[in-house]
Length: 148
Image 1 (spheres, helix red, strand yellow):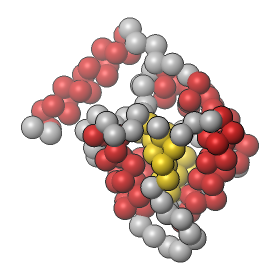
Image 2 (spheres, one colour):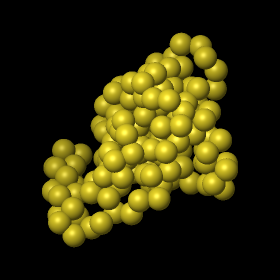
Image 3 (cartoon, helix red, strand yellow):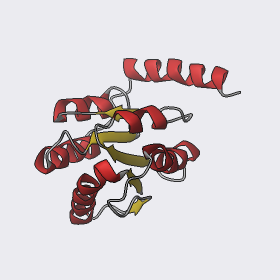
């Protein structure tokens, strides 16, 4: 299950991502927003990141105007590795090297085709482990210290 969230600046791209997930038969939960009214991105970033952090869903996808705000919010949560990406190489590396469990996109800076490709690349990639796991272990130690 994938949790999706966007603000008004990412709504149109989130709709496109939902189409992709439906085409691929991937279940998702849309955590909002559901209209073009101006909203605050932290409200929707929190909903998705909290679900990933608690293990209620395996992955999340967040979209705001640039992706910057959503990535800042999501990375406040323990066990979340949110990666803002702007091309397919970054999407692949986010999964293969960082095991990113939230993909973050900018609805005002990406076109639909490029974003669909990035989401597909991230979904299809696999974490490589090895030396990369050691780095994630270091991040986990930081989280353990900060979130006692």
